[in-house]
Image (cartoon, rainbow, N blue to C red; front, side, top):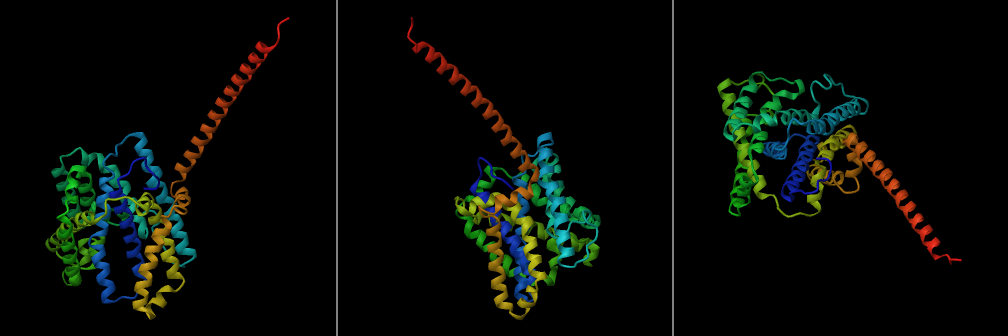
Length: 368
């Protein structure tokens, strides 16, 4: 998620960049005053963009194994950034924002939950890929439904297990199955699905609440019976899946400047929180409270601009060194080794050229 691969599917890079931009957008809306429109926009977005992100993550994790190389890659690209940015964001919130935080590392703060979830999802990948697809999905759904009864905040295990079905659906997907989403007639169907979601999320609070979209609260905390809780989560799992597929059906397949930014989604994800929190500490929420309509438009535009800036060719590679310091160090070591080998080869070539020149000079001398 932080660097460039030799071959990439433009479809998924477009999807990843669009989804991480929506993450920034959703987080930026917390800077706005509460209103019917803001709450509706928020509920509509969270009904599908996190499930879609998890689904895409699962699909791109299908090749993960418990090999030494892949485990080291998991530590390097997920665990290490989690520790670094959990510390950095906590220090920023404490010393710049004056906040009081508890349970650092045990309870991931704000956007850091996704790295904790990704770490465990990747570790579980070989288990689920070894099962038949139908069995794997069934196990994931049952686990998600049961997690609401007992899973707690430790390493955000409630969300790890609650969102697990979307990840396993991604694991079970294949290029051939996903090719069906490219069928032209599915696009108008996808539009209809989003229109229906927009209408239905108008009444989210009458049958559930926004908290359900986070998959983090125990059923007891939501003050509903277990039967009602199972039914509500089942509806969210089904609707989230349908809308995630609808999103992919609408994502462009062609490459371009936006596609290339899809290689840097982790950079956008990890750094945008500093900007959003910084705006909050600077008093931006007070200004939006006085200018709600202008604030909504401006905040949304700035959120999209921030995502594009962080993923831009001049910014993302630099910030990528911070996100993946071990990868950066390994590249520097490999480069130094290549330079050393090239230097040795150059010395050998130079020596051979010198010897050849000396031999030619001797041959050119007149014989007496």
